[in-house]
Image: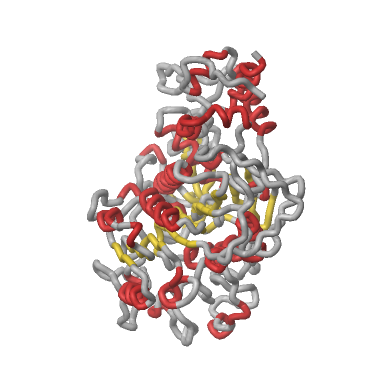
Length: 603
């Protein structure tokens, strides 16, 4: 009886989707008082049960939603639920069920509202930087080529630290692999737009372009797996020239140079350009993998050509990269960027942005199924926000892409829930001495290419970033280091401490009160990994040979022992929209997929 009472209490951790009835108007019924009481008690039980994982991370995976600020995250949560037929507000994106979360201050050294290059330098290199600069400390100003060539100002990234520790590394992105976010892992450039030699101009004379750095310099040429877009900046475009993307003028094909470098160094390299080629890669016989699936950025997911001759999805790329790195078994750092969220928001296209965010959500969920959270730190965050807002007083369950239902008392017109403070969606006209805006009822506001109204006019793709804090969610070893409002550059230092690399290579001693997870002893120092100080720690007792390693370290040890083959069920439950408390043992039996009570007794 004691065991079942405990299981019933902790049963609230295992979230189930509650089927609700639909009213005549099509909206879902709203919850009653008991639901909210049970929800709070279940959440409290979960919070009281969280424990800290002090393991040393063998692997670190960072997911970056470019431009995925708090507003975009909230809107995507609602959009995800509504796509599945629910009200949406009560749901969760996968990372929102991680045990640890914090806020990050995103300003640049010289800007109140940041750009993606300087923010990437912060969270990947551990140093705040100037606007539009990559991998350089604040001594280097935008466009200062001469200063950027001085290695004393270079800021190595966590990817560099991982390689120095003998770990494998990878980057996956839906943007060009030379774009701001991925470039900060390997490049040092006084201007983020110096992606190829054609963009260097007079100010960049004497500096190496970003694509060249990826192929020719450390740590770029030592990255084991690189998947994304950007064939044109490599001099290997397969279509017509894109004048909005950097064009190589030196006649070099960097993909061929990349392959030649791998061959000359005694390794096997594989270069692929479509989904079919990516899936055909033999991981056991490939040392390095480069995949460029578009001349510029890869397509938005809703436009993506599906099939062998098309481009892989973010999820396909991430899973391939993950399996590639796991195959080597050296431990790894992997950066996965959902980069086109940002591009849609720059164009005031909310539906495209939300679709891309849901794609990132699906990717995170898929990767979580393939990793052991006992030895893998997973972080999800954004680099900056945008100026999209959720406004008005729409009813619960109202389409997040729809009209609020409110009418302006000034012009007598309604407005959409999602709007922007600036951008190309301004769409105003002058009638006499009045400024008149479009009536959103005359447009298909749910269309993929509908531009939400904006207050200040701007050219297409010119909506600005927002300067508010962004969120970060974390799970796995040392994820509790994210726990309040942090400066953005703290992220790199926390990830490095988790894996005992870079600035923490000789300073990651766990305190005496640190706890290690079941069957996971502190790693022993090796010749390829920096010495790990473990003074004052007791090695945990080893479990039985072949024992399964738990993937959900925030659950109680009691529930952890009962999970076994139900991990997928729990993972699915973590993202559902409603919870209930469990009052009888049969509820929990059904939840765990068991027909009878477990025979083991609680100890």
